[in-house]
Amino acid sequence: MQAWQNVEVPSIATPSPVPRVFDSVSQGLTTLPTGREVTIYVCGITPYDATHIGHAATYVAFDTLIRVWRNSGAEVRYAQNVTDVDDPLIERAQATGRDWRDIALEQTDLFRGDMQALRVIPPDYFIGAVESIPLVIKRIHDIQETGACYELGGDLYFDNAYSRTSGTVGHLTRHQMVEIFGERGGDPDRIGKRSPLDALLWRGERPNDPSWPSDFGPGRPGWHIECAAIALEYLGEKIDIQGGGSDLKFPHHEMSAAHAEAATGNYPFASTFVHTGMVSLQGQKMSKSLGNLVFVSSLIQKGVDPMAIRLAILAHHYRSDWEWFEQDLVNAQARLKLWRDAFACPLAAASVSDAVVAALSNDIDTPQALQLVDNWARETLVGQGGDTRSSRYMSVLVDSLLGIV
Ligand code: 5CA
Ligand code: ZN
Image (cartoon, rainbow, N blue to C red; front, side, top):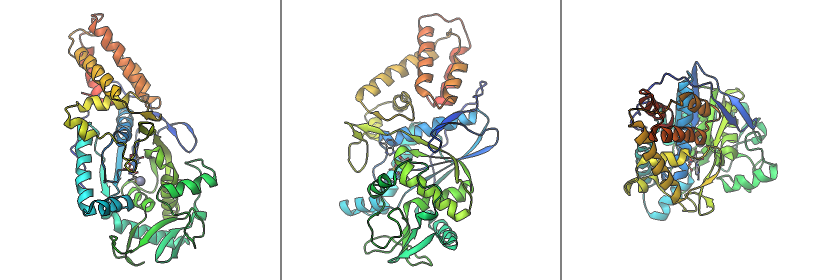
C-alpha cells in the first residue's frame, strides 16, 4: 500500500544520547541499539473508524521515539500494517450495508491524511492484510512443519503449547488470559480446541465472509499471523522493537511473536516490546466498539491546528493512561502560541537543547521536554536572552525531535 507523503526532518547538531525505553517483557528500562540499521514494527489500524485521539497518541508516540532514535545515530527501518480484513470491519460492513473494501479504503485514506497533518513520518513499509495473504500462507506452511498447527472444522489453529512467549508480554494469570482472549478476538470456549488459548491461523470460508484460496482450503488469515508474516517479510526474522498500544500486549503481541518464532525457529522474535497507554473519554477507553471517540479529522475540520493536537498528545507520557478533555486542546493552543512567539524573537534565552535531548532519550519523556521548552520560551519573551542563534536553533530542534513547527 502507499503510505503518506514523507515528512521533512531537519538534522540537528545535538545528537541524542542512546535512548532508553520501557520494555513490557522485562518490565524495566532497556537501552536500545543504535549506530546501525535497526527495525521497528508498529501495529496499524483496523480501518473502520479512523483516526481517534487514542490511535493518534500511539502513532505520535512511536514517531517521537523514531525521531529520537534516528538522532542517536540509528538507521531505522519501520513497518506498519493495516488490518484491512478482519471481523470488526466485516461486522461494520454488514451493519451499514456497505462493502467492507469501500470502508477500508475510505478509512485508510482518512488515516493517511491525519498522520500527514500530525507530521508523523510514514513507515517504510505500509502493508495491508489483504495484500499479504500469500505471505501468511507461506508462514502457515512453515508452522505446519513444526507440528504447532492443527485443523478443526476447516479452520487452522496454533497450538499454544508450542509458544515460548505465552505469558511473557502481558504478565497475566492463565485465568485472566482466557477471559481477555475472549474479549479481544479469541474463541476460548470453542469445543475441540487443544487449549482455550489456541489462536486461529486460518479461518475457513463461511457464508457471506470474504475468502481467498489456499492449499488448506478457502478462507482468510487470523489476526496475529498477519502481523507476524508482515514483520518477518519486511524487517527480518528478528526485530528490535514490536510496538503498539497496551491493549495489544495480550493476546496480540504474545501470539504474533509465538507464530513468528514457530515459523522461523528464532527466539525471541522481538528484542523489546514497547506499549503506549490507553486514551479514554468520559471515563472509558476510547474505542470503536464503545463509540466514545474524538476524531483527529473532525478536530482539523473544525479549524484546530494539527500541531496543537500533536502538542496535546505530547503533554502526556507515552506509557501513561490518560483521559482526553477539551482543556487539553486549549492548553496546547496556548503552548503553541508561546513557542511560536519565542521562535520569532531575534534575541533568545540560552538554548536548552542538551536538556531536551536528554529528557527525550530518557524513556521519551515528552512532558519534561515540553516543560523545558516552555521555560526557555518564557525567559525569551520576558527579554532575558542575549543569544542571537538560539531561537532559530530551538525551533529546528523542536521540529526535528518533537515534530512541531
Ligand atoms: N489492527 C490492529 C493491530 S494489528 C488494531 O489494534 N487496530 S486498532 O485500530 O484497533 O488500533 C490501532 C492502534 O491504536 C493499536 O496500536 C492500538 O493499540 C492503538 N489504540 C487503540 N485504541 C487506543 C486508545 N484508546 N488509546 C491509545 N491507543 C489506542
Ligand atoms: Zn498487529
